Amino acid sequence: MRGLETRDRTPLERLLVGTDAFRPDEIPVALELIDLGLTPGGGGYRFVVAELADDVRGAAVVGYACFGATPCTLGTFDLYWIAVDKARQGLGIGKLLVRAVEDAVRADGGRLVLIETGGKPSYAAQRAFYASAGYVEVARVPDFYEEGDDRVIYRKKLR
Image (cartoon, rainbow, N blue to C red):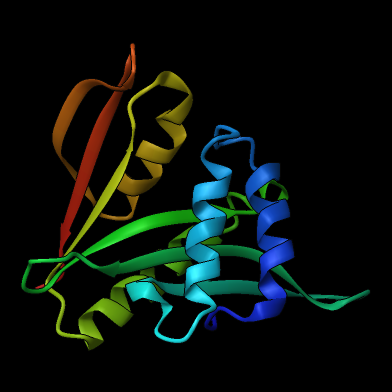
């Protein structure tokens, strides 16, 4: 696990598109945050990048998480984006990313992490992943993103 570097932008764009988890209109939003993260100060957005050794290229970016302190709160952080290369899902990379985010939040004195995701059936695996990482559903807004796609909010207390 390491921080975001300029060389990560293109592999992360490929990764986001390749997961088939995000709508086409969501990808530019994720890329905008990555671009902000590459500027001095990062716009308040922080990143953890996972890479694995690759015999051909040396190392390949296989996942990332974007998180940050929630404005106007004391010790609450949002996990905005998490994505793992589709070919490497199920290997524990996502859990390592979540753990790295939680460690960084704790180091900053954070006490709470929130995650927002969709409620449509195609997001069932994501919701199961959050639950398996110790997050609990605390709120649901019906039809938030579109008809039949609820906004689901998960929470994990770190202390």
